Length: 141
Image 1 (cartoon, rainbow, N blue to C red):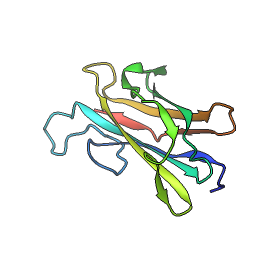
Image 2: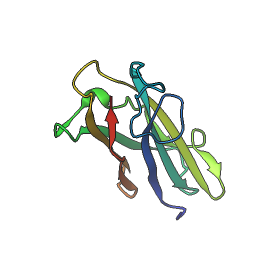
Image 3: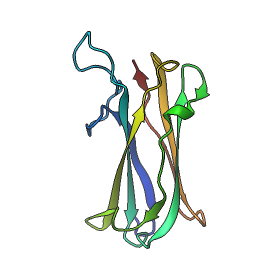
Image 4: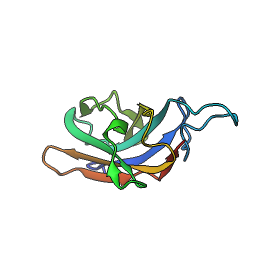
């Protein structure tokens, strides 16, 4: 990666506590059991070594219900203030990586058996760093 760049490298859903993407993140592990009431949304950001300067940036993540064709604010994560700093970024070779996991509660009604996805955008104050990425679709059960 260029030392002046940063990007959203991955965004995916998974069962709570897991690190592997899952297209049905709240599905029960055993057939016949109820679905989980929450799942994790994982966002990985990569930054070049010259970007880690303690400067703030904005990270926006919105959920989209592809079945209904609407946004689902109840599934949007609460995102704390973000800074290009170490920590929370970890040095990996010549670059820095940040993995953030957000616990997302599943609403009691309205999104079950719907296909959804997340859109993420990250940008700094002068828009010299801008990155956008969408997750793969997933199904809430």
